[in-house]
Image (cartoon, rainbow, N blue to C red; front, top):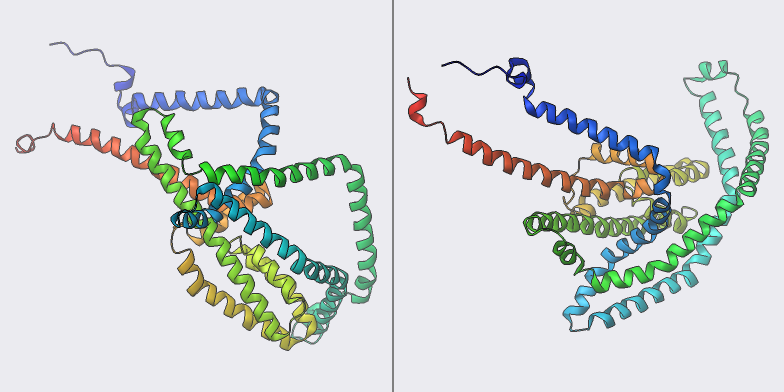
Length: 396
Protein backbone atom coordinates (compact mmCIF):
# COMPACT_ATOMS: atom_id res chain seq x y z
CA UNK A 1 0.00 0.00 0.00
CA UNK A 2 1.41 3.37 -0.98
CA UNK A 3 2.16 5.66 1.89
CA UNK A 4 0.73 9.16 1.94
CA UNK A 5 2.81 12.13 0.99
CA UNK A 6 4.91 13.49 3.84
CA UNK A 7 3.62 16.88 5.02
CA UNK A 8 5.67 19.78 6.28
CA UNK A 9 4.43 19.24 9.85
CA UNK A 10 5.43 15.55 9.84
CA UNK A 11 9.12 16.21 9.19
CA UNK A 12 11.45 15.25 12.00
CA UNK A 13 12.67 18.79 12.71
CA UNK A 14 9.19 20.29 12.87
CA UNK A 15 7.98 17.40 15.00
CA UNK A 16 10.90 18.06 17.33
CA UNK A 17 9.80 21.70 17.63
CA UNK A 18 6.21 20.65 18.37
CA UNK A 19 4.56 20.20 14.98
CA UNK A 20 1.42 22.25 14.40
CA UNK A 21 1.63 23.59 17.93
CA UNK A 22 4.74 25.51 16.92
CA UNK A 23 2.89 27.19 14.06
CA UNK A 24 -0.04 28.04 16.33
CA UNK A 25 2.34 29.52 18.91
CA UNK A 26 4.11 31.68 16.31
CA UNK A 27 0.79 32.91 14.91
CA UNK A 28 -0.41 33.69 18.44
CA UNK A 29 2.76 35.67 19.24
CA UNK A 30 2.41 37.54 15.95
CA UNK A 31 -1.21 38.44 16.69
CA UNK A 32 -0.34 39.61 20.21
CA UNK A 33 2.43 41.82 18.81
CA UNK A 34 0.08 43.18 16.16
CA UNK A 35 -2.56 44.02 18.77
CA UNK A 36 0.02 45.79 20.95
CA UNK A 37 1.23 47.81 17.94
CA UNK A 38 -2.32 48.81 16.97
CA UNK A 39 -3.15 49.89 20.52
CA UNK A 40 0.06 51.95 20.61
CA UNK A 41 -0.82 53.70 17.34
CA UNK A 42 -4.37 54.58 18.43
CA UNK A 43 -3.52 55.20 22.09
CA UNK A 44 -5.13 58.68 21.91
CA UNK A 45 -8.53 56.98 21.63
CA UNK A 46 -8.08 55.58 25.14
CA UNK A 47 -7.07 58.90 26.74
CA UNK A 48 -10.54 59.51 28.27
CA UNK A 49 -10.43 56.00 29.73
CA UNK A 50 -6.96 56.73 31.12
CA UNK A 51 -8.23 59.91 32.80
CA UNK A 52 -11.23 58.02 34.21
CA UNK A 53 -9.01 55.29 35.66
CA UNK A 54 -6.57 57.86 37.08
CA UNK A 55 -9.41 59.52 38.99
CA UNK A 56 -11.14 56.30 40.05
CA UNK A 57 -8.25 54.04 41.03
CA UNK A 58 -7.09 56.01 44.10
CA UNK A 59 -10.47 56.25 45.91
CA UNK A 60 -11.29 52.63 45.02
CA UNK A 61 -7.95 51.42 46.45
CA UNK A 62 -8.36 53.47 49.63
CA UNK A 63 -11.95 52.29 50.07
CA UNK A 64 -10.91 48.67 49.46
CA UNK A 65 -8.19 48.88 52.11
CA UNK A 66 -10.67 50.37 54.58
CA UNK A 67 -13.22 47.70 53.64
CA UNK A 68 -10.88 44.84 54.51
CA UNK A 69 -9.93 46.55 57.77
CA UNK A 70 -13.53 47.16 58.84
CA UNK A 71 -15.16 44.00 57.50
CA UNK A 72 -14.30 41.85 60.58
CA UNK A 73 -15.88 44.48 62.84
CA UNK A 74 -18.99 44.59 60.64
CA UNK A 75 -19.33 40.81 60.81
CA UNK A 76 -19.06 40.89 64.60
CA UNK A 77 -21.82 43.49 64.86
CA UNK A 78 -24.02 41.43 62.54
CA UNK A 79 -23.44 38.39 64.76
CA UNK A 80 -24.87 40.43 67.66
CA UNK A 81 -28.11 40.85 65.64
CA UNK A 82 -27.39 44.45 64.64
CA UNK A 83 -28.93 45.29 61.23
CA UNK A 84 -26.25 45.74 58.58
CA UNK A 85 -27.10 49.37 57.74
CA UNK A 86 -27.10 50.36 61.41
CA UNK A 87 -23.85 48.46 61.95
CA UNK A 88 -22.23 50.43 59.11
CA UNK A 89 -23.52 53.71 60.57
CA UNK A 90 -22.09 52.78 64.00
CA UNK A 91 -18.73 51.97 62.42
CA UNK A 92 -18.71 55.30 60.56
CA UNK A 93 -19.55 57.23 63.74
CA UNK A 94 -16.83 55.49 65.76
CA UNK A 95 -14.30 55.97 62.96
CA UNK A 96 -15.17 59.66 62.68
CA UNK A 97 -14.78 60.09 66.43
CA UNK A 98 -11.36 58.39 66.45
CA UNK A 99 -10.10 60.50 63.54
CA UNK A 100 -11.35 63.68 65.22
CA UNK A 101 -9.68 62.67 68.48
CA UNK A 102 -6.37 62.05 66.73
CA UNK A 103 -6.55 65.38 64.91
CA UNK A 104 -7.36 67.31 68.08
CA UNK A 105 -4.98 65.61 70.52
CA UNK A 106 -2.10 64.08 68.55
CA UNK A 107 -1.78 66.09 65.35
CA UNK A 108 -0.73 69.43 66.96
CA UNK A 109 2.03 67.69 68.93
CA UNK A 110 3.22 65.85 65.83
CA UNK A 111 3.16 69.07 63.83
CA UNK A 112 5.29 70.84 66.45
CA UNK A 113 7.83 68.00 66.54
CA UNK A 114 8.00 67.86 62.73
CA UNK A 115 8.53 71.63 62.51
CA UNK A 116 11.34 71.52 65.07
CA UNK A 117 12.98 68.54 63.38
CA UNK A 118 12.92 70.25 59.97
CA UNK A 119 14.49 73.36 61.47
CA UNK A 120 17.15 71.48 63.43
CA UNK A 121 17.99 68.72 60.96
CA UNK A 122 20.54 70.81 58.98
CA UNK A 123 22.42 71.34 62.26
CA UNK A 124 22.21 67.62 62.99
CA UNK A 125 23.64 66.95 59.54
CA UNK A 126 26.52 69.39 60.09
CA UNK A 127 27.39 67.78 63.40
CA UNK A 128 27.26 64.35 61.75
CA UNK A 129 29.71 65.43 59.02
CA UNK A 130 32.06 66.94 61.62
CA UNK A 131 31.93 63.77 63.71
CA UNK A 132 32.66 61.55 60.69
CA UNK A 133 35.54 63.85 59.69
CA UNK A 134 37.07 63.69 63.17
CA UNK A 135 36.70 59.91 63.26
CA UNK A 136 38.39 59.42 59.88
CA UNK A 137 41.28 61.74 60.78
CA UNK A 138 42.05 59.64 63.86
CA UNK A 139 41.40 56.20 62.35
CA UNK A 140 43.66 53.75 60.55
CA UNK A 141 42.43 55.24 57.28
CA UNK A 142 43.70 58.72 58.17
CA UNK A 143 46.54 58.66 55.61
CA UNK A 144 44.15 57.83 52.76
CA UNK A 145 41.60 60.35 54.01
CA UNK A 146 44.13 63.18 54.27
CA UNK A 147 45.30 62.52 50.73
CA UNK A 148 41.81 63.36 49.51
CA UNK A 149 42.32 66.97 50.77
CA UNK A 150 38.70 67.11 51.92
CA UNK A 151 37.89 70.41 53.67
CA UNK A 152 34.94 70.17 56.06
CA UNK A 153 34.77 73.94 56.65
CA UNK A 154 34.32 74.58 52.92
CA UNK A 155 31.52 72.00 52.83
CA UNK A 156 29.83 73.62 55.84
CA UNK A 157 29.93 77.00 54.10
CA UNK A 158 28.47 75.58 50.90
CA UNK A 159 25.59 73.70 52.54
CA UNK A 160 23.40 76.78 53.29
CA UNK A 161 24.03 78.14 49.78
CA UNK A 162 23.16 74.80 48.19
CA UNK A 163 20.02 74.51 50.30
CA UNK A 164 19.02 78.02 49.23
CA UNK A 165 19.52 77.18 45.56
CA UNK A 166 17.50 74.01 45.95
CA UNK A 167 14.68 75.94 47.61
CA UNK A 168 14.70 78.57 44.85
CA UNK A 169 14.57 75.91 42.15
CA UNK A 170 11.78 74.14 44.01
CA UNK A 171 9.74 77.33 44.36
CA UNK A 172 10.29 78.14 40.68
CA UNK A 173 9.23 74.65 39.66
CA UNK A 174 6.12 74.86 41.81
CA UNK A 175 5.26 78.28 40.40
CA UNK A 176 5.65 77.08 36.81
CA UNK A 177 3.62 73.95 37.48
CA UNK A 178 0.94 75.56 39.63
CA UNK A 179 -1.81 74.25 37.35
CA UNK A 180 -0.60 70.69 37.76
CA UNK A 181 -0.36 71.13 41.55
CA UNK A 182 -3.93 72.43 41.73
CA UNK A 183 -5.13 69.56 39.56
CA UNK A 184 -3.37 67.01 41.77
CA UNK A 185 -4.78 68.55 44.96
CA UNK A 186 -8.24 68.63 43.44
CA UNK A 187 -8.01 64.97 42.52
CA UNK A 188 -6.76 64.08 46.01
CA UNK A 189 -9.58 66.03 47.69
CA UNK A 190 -12.18 64.41 45.44
CA UNK A 191 -10.68 61.00 46.23
CA UNK A 192 -10.89 61.62 49.98
CA UNK A 193 -14.47 62.88 49.66
CA UNK A 194 -15.63 59.93 47.57
CA UNK A 195 -13.94 57.25 49.71
CA UNK A 196 -16.69 57.21 52.41
CA UNK A 197 -19.42 56.70 49.79
CA UNK A 198 -17.55 53.87 48.06
CA UNK A 199 -16.73 52.33 51.45
CA UNK A 200 -20.38 52.46 52.53
CA UNK A 201 -21.57 50.50 49.50
CA UNK A 202 -18.65 48.07 49.77
CA UNK A 203 -19.60 47.30 53.36
CA UNK A 204 -23.27 47.07 52.42
CA UNK A 205 -23.02 44.96 49.23
CA UNK A 206 -19.43 43.69 49.23
CA UNK A 207 -20.40 40.19 50.30
CA UNK A 208 -22.79 39.89 47.35
CA UNK A 209 -20.41 41.28 44.76
CA UNK A 210 -18.60 37.95 44.02
CA UNK A 211 -21.90 36.16 43.41
CA UNK A 212 -23.05 38.96 41.11
CA UNK A 213 -19.84 38.61 39.07
CA UNK A 214 -20.22 34.82 38.93
CA UNK A 215 -23.77 35.13 37.58
CA UNK A 216 -22.40 37.08 34.61
CA UNK A 217 -20.09 34.21 33.61
CA UNK A 218 -20.97 30.98 31.77
CA UNK A 219 -21.87 28.14 34.17
CA UNK A 220 -18.82 26.06 33.27
CA UNK A 221 -16.47 28.90 34.39
CA UNK A 222 -18.17 29.70 37.68
CA UNK A 223 -16.57 27.05 39.87
CA UNK A 224 -12.98 27.87 38.87
CA UNK A 225 -13.63 31.62 39.03
CA UNK A 226 -15.15 31.20 42.48
CA UNK A 227 -12.01 29.43 43.69
CA UNK A 228 -9.79 32.20 42.30
CA UNK A 229 -11.91 34.94 43.88
CA UNK A 230 -12.04 33.12 47.20
CA UNK A 231 -8.26 32.67 47.33
CA UNK A 232 -7.65 36.25 46.18
CA UNK A 233 -9.98 37.58 48.88
CA UNK A 234 -8.13 35.50 51.48
CA UNK A 235 -4.73 36.77 50.33
CA UNK A 236 -5.75 40.46 50.27
CA UNK A 237 -7.54 40.26 53.60
CA UNK A 238 -4.63 38.52 55.33
CA UNK A 239 -2.07 40.94 53.95
CA UNK A 240 -3.91 44.22 54.60
CA UNK A 241 -5.16 43.36 58.09
CA UNK A 242 -1.90 41.71 59.09
CA UNK A 243 0.41 44.40 57.74
CA UNK A 244 -1.57 47.23 59.36
CA UNK A 245 -1.56 45.47 62.75
CA UNK A 246 2.15 44.68 62.49
CA UNK A 247 2.92 48.31 61.57
CA UNK A 248 0.92 49.61 64.53
CA UNK A 249 2.77 47.23 66.88
CA UNK A 250 6.15 48.33 65.50
CA UNK A 251 5.29 52.03 65.83
CA UNK A 252 4.11 51.53 69.42
CA UNK A 253 7.21 49.56 70.41
CA UNK A 254 9.55 52.11 68.78
CA UNK A 255 7.77 55.00 70.54
CA UNK A 256 7.96 53.29 73.96
CA UNK A 257 11.59 52.25 73.41
CA UNK A 258 12.65 55.76 72.36
CA UNK A 259 10.87 57.23 75.38
CA UNK A 260 12.76 54.85 77.68
CA UNK A 261 16.20 55.76 76.28
CA UNK A 262 15.38 59.48 76.12
CA UNK A 263 15.52 59.89 72.34
CA UNK A 264 14.37 63.24 70.97
CA UNK A 265 11.25 63.28 68.77
CA UNK A 266 10.17 59.85 70.06
CA UNK A 267 6.51 60.22 68.98
CA UNK A 268 7.39 61.51 65.50
CA UNK A 269 9.94 58.73 64.94
CA UNK A 270 7.45 56.13 66.19
CA UNK A 271 4.79 57.35 63.76
CA UNK A 272 7.38 57.35 60.97
CA UNK A 273 8.31 53.74 61.83
CA UNK A 274 4.63 52.75 61.83
CA UNK A 275 4.01 54.32 58.41
CA UNK A 276 7.13 52.99 56.70
CA UNK A 277 6.68 49.49 58.15
CA UNK A 278 3.78 49.03 55.75
CA UNK A 279 6.53 48.31 53.19
CA UNK A 280 8.24 45.02 54.17
CA UNK A 281 12.04 44.91 54.61
CA UNK A 282 12.70 48.33 53.04
CA UNK A 283 10.42 50.27 55.41
CA UNK A 284 12.46 49.70 58.60
CA UNK A 285 15.62 50.89 56.84
CA UNK A 286 13.90 54.16 55.91
CA UNK A 287 12.54 54.57 59.46
CA UNK A 288 15.89 54.06 61.23
CA UNK A 289 17.84 56.60 59.13
CA UNK A 290 16.72 59.87 60.83
CA UNK A 291 16.83 58.25 64.27
CA UNK A 292 20.41 57.10 63.61
CA UNK A 293 21.49 60.62 62.59
CA UNK A 294 19.99 62.12 65.76
CA UNK A 295 21.56 59.41 67.93
CA UNK A 296 25.04 59.81 66.39
CA UNK A 297 24.98 63.56 66.94
CA UNK A 298 23.62 63.24 70.49
CA UNK A 299 26.25 60.80 71.82
CA UNK A 300 27.85 57.43 71.05
CA UNK A 301 26.04 56.01 74.07
CA UNK A 302 22.70 57.10 72.57
CA UNK A 303 23.63 55.31 69.36
CA UNK A 304 24.30 52.11 71.34
CA UNK A 305 20.93 52.44 73.11
CA UNK A 306 19.23 53.03 69.76
CA UNK A 307 20.83 49.86 68.37
CA UNK A 308 19.56 47.88 71.38
CA UNK A 309 16.00 49.22 71.04
CA UNK A 310 15.89 48.59 67.31
CA UNK A 311 17.29 45.08 67.70
CA UNK A 312 14.69 44.24 70.34
CA UNK A 313 11.88 45.65 68.18
CA UNK A 314 12.99 43.65 65.14
CA UNK A 315 13.37 40.44 67.17
CA UNK A 316 9.95 40.79 68.79
CA UNK A 317 8.35 41.63 65.45
CA UNK A 318 10.09 38.84 63.55
CA UNK A 319 9.77 36.07 66.14
CA UNK A 320 6.41 36.77 67.81
CA UNK A 321 4.24 39.46 66.17
CA UNK A 322 4.49 38.68 62.45
CA UNK A 323 4.22 34.87 62.85
CA UNK A 324 1.11 35.27 65.00
CA UNK A 325 -0.60 37.95 62.90
CA UNK A 326 0.66 37.36 59.35
CA UNK A 327 1.61 33.69 59.56
CA UNK A 328 2.67 32.22 56.25
CA UNK A 329 -0.39 33.34 54.34
CA UNK A 330 1.45 34.86 51.36
CA UNK A 331 4.14 32.19 50.93
CA UNK A 332 6.48 34.70 49.26
CA UNK A 333 10.24 34.40 49.64
CA UNK A 334 11.98 37.51 51.08
CA UNK A 335 14.21 37.84 47.99
CA UNK A 336 11.10 37.81 45.80
CA UNK A 337 9.54 40.52 47.98
CA UNK A 338 12.61 42.74 47.60
CA UNK A 339 12.65 42.30 43.82
CA UNK A 340 8.91 43.02 43.61
CA UNK A 341 9.29 46.18 45.70
CA UNK A 342 12.22 47.47 43.63
CA UNK A 343 10.46 46.75 40.33
CA UNK A 344 7.08 48.13 41.39
CA UNK A 345 8.74 51.22 42.88
CA UNK A 346 10.64 51.89 39.64
CA UNK A 347 7.51 51.48 37.54
CA UNK A 348 4.84 53.17 39.68
CA UNK A 349 6.67 55.07 42.43
CA UNK A 350 5.34 55.13 46.00
CA UNK A 351 1.96 53.53 45.09
CA UNK A 352 3.87 50.69 43.47
CA UNK A 353 5.92 50.11 46.61
CA UNK A 354 2.79 50.03 48.77
CA UNK A 355 0.65 47.92 46.44
CA UNK A 356 3.38 45.80 44.86
CA UNK A 357 3.16 42.90 47.32
CA UNK A 358 -0.66 42.46 47.30
CA UNK A 359 -0.61 42.88 43.52
CA UNK A 360 2.01 40.16 43.24
CA UNK A 361 -0.04 37.94 45.57
CA UNK A 362 -3.10 38.32 43.32
CA UNK A 363 -1.05 37.62 40.20
CA UNK A 364 0.43 34.56 41.90
CA UNK A 365 -3.07 33.25 42.72
CA UNK A 366 -4.20 33.72 39.11
CA UNK A 367 -1.07 32.12 37.61
CA UNK A 368 -1.20 29.17 40.02
CA UNK A 369 -4.84 28.51 39.17
CA UNK A 370 -4.21 28.77 35.43
CA UNK A 371 -1.32 26.34 35.79
CA UNK A 372 -3.55 23.97 37.77
CA UNK A 373 -6.17 24.08 35.01
CA UNK A 374 -3.47 23.39 32.43
CA UNK A 375 -2.20 20.39 34.41
CA UNK A 376 -5.74 19.09 34.84
CA UNK A 377 -6.36 19.27 31.09
CA UNK A 378 -2.95 17.79 30.25
CA UNK A 379 -3.34 14.93 32.70
CA UNK A 380 -6.76 14.12 31.26
CA UNK A 381 -5.32 13.82 27.77
CA UNK A 382 -2.27 11.99 29.09
CA UNK A 383 -4.54 9.42 30.74
CA UNK A 384 -6.45 8.96 27.47
CA UNK A 385 -3.21 8.33 25.60
CA UNK A 386 -1.91 5.91 28.20
CA UNK A 387 -5.06 3.83 27.92
CA UNK A 388 -3.99 2.83 24.39
CA UNK A 389 -0.86 1.15 25.76
CA UNK A 390 -1.84 -2.17 27.29
CA UNK A 391 0.67 -4.31 29.17
CA UNK A 392 0.52 -6.97 26.45
CA UNK A 393 1.77 -4.49 23.89
CA UNK A 394 4.85 -3.75 25.96
CA UNK A 395 5.92 -7.42 26.14
CA UNK A 396 8.22 -8.98 23.48
